[in-house]
Image (cartoon, rainbow, N blue to C red; front, side):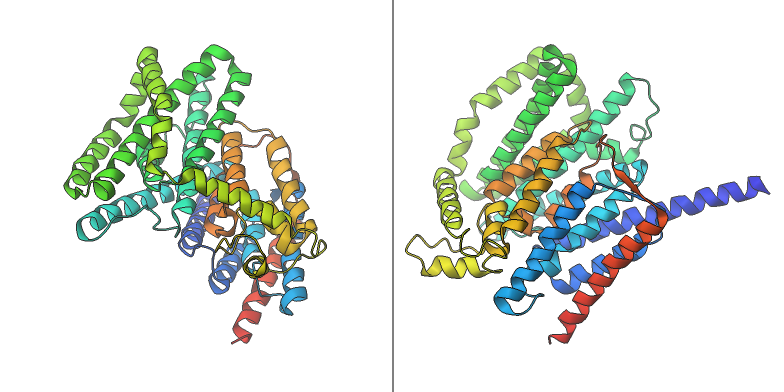
Length: 472
């Protein structure tokens, strides 16, 4: 009897695992397409996630992240109520999904988290393919522009690809580590992993074609943090070899992305885009072999890395106004800081900074968000919300990780300091789902506590949806 029951139980667990991981992947895809999100979609997705996770047996919650995140969301509701008399007006009904996504990620077992990370990378690959094909079609039929399809903005799509690349690199580093220690590696035997590892140039080519200088700088900062972590773990010689191999792959792919963009937009030669696309397909087929060649031929990797580093200043010619854009953002941050003292407890209220900016004597920046999430939160939602986000950022950085997670953390933090990615639910969702690998112990939530947590979150999503429907 036991021999009959045991396989059935294993099959049931695997099926339940597949349902949750697939549901989270579909949820991320929908959230990404919706951009900043809509109350109806976000509430329904949150309810679906909480309903599935209600049957999880346990969750490992880092309360230094969950509680400040809950405080930030709460201040969103309070600020909207104080400013507009409606707590559902603003970002509270949207950003509450971050709590559900984080709790769901904390309920995943190790194998589930690794599978979800790969599926998130797969989602980015699909987005890259769709965006590149769309660019080529545009180059033949209309005026081609920077890639933005899926997320909705070039800068948002850029950081989306940066997060996906670090997630893929984390998986690659884990496979290499397990091979080096002779650990059994289900990830290394995964067909999905081997397929996605070949698709790395697609992600990087699409990243280059967004022409998002902020995302490229974020990638660079993340790489610096990754290389420092590698140096501390393995020493100088191994870290240098590791860095040259990665830089070679990145510089080659980004150069191809710039070439395709110039062919379709600057040179108005769409036929060249097809030639470059054929070259990218060849790159994908031979990518793992190319990676092995770089590892075995240190001199070649050093040459490509050196040439790539020397060409970085020339990349600025792709966006000659990049310097002025960053200067304007720093000016915008200064404008935002001047409003921090207007209502430090609950903030000015959602969507009020732009109204104030129109009326003040300084420059008008024509945007809803200050390009710094901490300053924006302090201005519109109060210093409590601002402090809550700072606590989360500090906590994320002091946690210990394997693989490339600290690099991903640094890249996202830089983006949050200079752009508006935090307001795009798909971008934050991508980070939450791929930020695995922490070896810092977390508090285990019992089965009863897990059910209470997801039950309360489900109820909150339902109340928000009910209030949203009743407002019509």
